[in-house]
Image 1 (cartoon, chains in turn yellow, orange):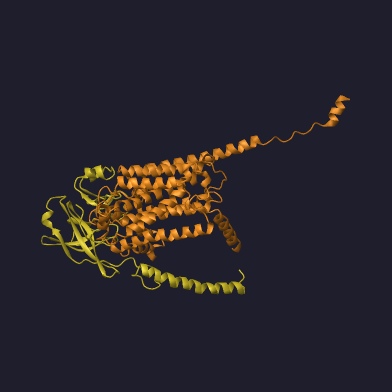
Image 2: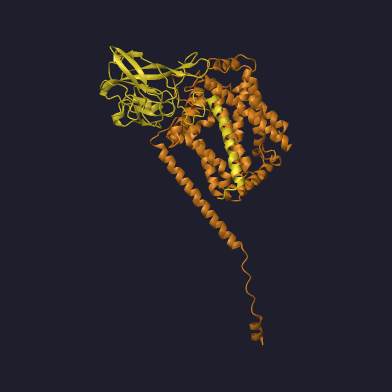
Length: 223
Length: 389
């Protein structure tokens, strides 16, 4: 390719034009997404939420295998509006399993319980697929009836967890990966809470990140 | 390079001359109801814009106020039900009109030269109407709105799984920009409001510029048709009071939960596909639709004279209806259905392809047979002369 005067001048003119476009685009992106710095190419994936230690329930409610209860863990997110931060709910379920398991998430390596094996496990109910809140289903027949017609194989015919939106089904006692998906489009198993048991109290100290949470509803809740 | 640009400019110039946004150049064909849908697109769009602005008088765009303000508007404000009904059912009619027009243009081959640009704009308008739809029903802040917003805005986060793209965090950035933060909340509602309103205003201005420059008539329907549409929408608004659903509850996803009707087939698809593909597939469908004029290169316009594209069109319609039915019945066995659907798709596409090949061969043979035979060589006069003598 011959570089003549015309081509050289054209190329040189392009530099301030590209610079100008970037100078307009960067503030526009930052206007829409204020947690990025000026001219930051790789976007910040989100500000880390924090919740601290919260007592969510008691082991007294989890005596027999497949006893369970729902709870809500509240985290605080930085929010670039006039209020500065937002509280966000993470719906959770605590389950008593029939046998002790190692509570370490197989996909992410997140350690949910670091004091050996446990038969009490705490899952986030935010579906790792697209973020709906899935339910704990004590009787697996209900999964077959209401969640698209999936019939679990024999070893999995016990309590399961199922998502109303896209019908992912999770097995709380999946061997080697508690909470793993056994049917449906979810790419991985349920997210974990990190928790400790202090006396009778179940204390959540952290939560696996990655999902889009939701701010608590102001106003009346649905029955 | 400059040659390519000049060609492109010429191509655009030519298509711009023949641009037809609302069937305003096809008024002579209005004997067929299929040719009033373009006019209906414009009419319903205007109804939606006007009723939308009237709705803004009472609407409160906050997570605490939205649901109550719409409930109040629907049940207490005089004629609030009518304005909301006109807006909602007008929007439904708009989407239906655009869809029928797309299918008409598809099966009648109207996307072919010089209709390519009109087709692409029409197709883009369906996408814009659907975006307006999802941001619009988001404004009610009921359960359907909440979970639709959440699932749709989680889809882009999977784009970060595409090799090379992940390290820039583009997927999460897209989600953040629409959510207005890392979680779904007030900023999301505000941004939805801005998008919902912005799309129609920007494109209404562009349509006005188009009409101003081409000096064409905006409304190409008879007063009778206009009156009928208004009466119909009024009747439906009165008879089927627009639904409220239940107030959004972030801690409970209802079972079953359905989207607005035109998203149902897509919703079923998302159940069947891995999430990254579910994020890419709609893009591919839109891309395929947009590029149809350049894929179907024949000059034939009658559907049966281009069997492949005819079958694909019918199959797409069948899938839309089939998936919608499946989701209404809440049937989705994820281990069983996708292989069947995949197999059926392969068989249908292959058969369509074979039909196309057979059709083209038969056509070539017929053309061969119809060609006049080469003139026979004239008998040699010398020979006959010799014989007779």
